[in-house]
Image (cartoon, rainbow, N blue to C red; front, top):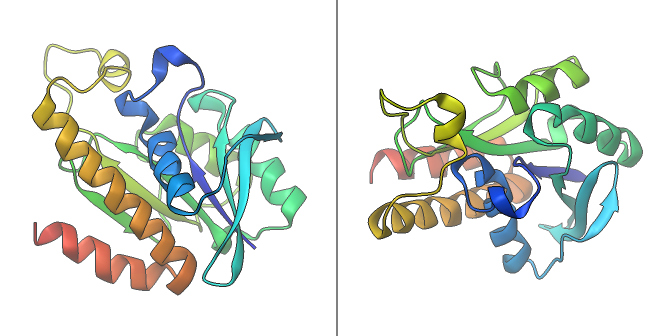
Amino acid sequence: MKLIVGLGNPGREYEHSRHNTGFDVLEILSQMTSTPIAKAQSRALIGQTSIGGDKVILARPQTFMNASGESVKPLMDFFKIPPENLLVIYDDIDIPQGSIRMRPNGSAGSHNGMKSIIYQLHSESFARLRVGVGQKPANWDLAAWVLSQYRDVKERELMFDALKSAAEAAVCWAEKGVNAAMNLYNKKQEGK
């Protein structure tokens, strides 16, 4: 069994903000796999599907971003999912807007949701898929920037393409593993 987690904040005021990129990718995955993400469990909304013959849990933590690990850890414990079968999808301000980067492990960087997950799991050894949401302008506060909406049609179109690519990369991860997803989707992004 595998677990794909999309990070974000619950509540209408946060919908489709930069920080809710993980939720938006999971919504596309939900549509691709015809899997409602509606069952409440372990302080998350989850849906169960099958990808590439494996059972896959899709999860959106409802703990708010900075406490994401308080949902992810109980889900992993309940479903007996080892860290190597976890993929976390989240926003990143440090890679180009509209790009995606799959990695097999690594640090949290400046992302508080990832810090919470790493703290709760006592491990950095799980896959992550970062989606570039744009660098913070000099005159913006970081929190205000990541909680902001995309500014215009061009930016929304760029991000929609990135969200679709991220959902496809997550399916590739579930079917073929992190190396195959990295080889296909990281190179695809570089060649844009």
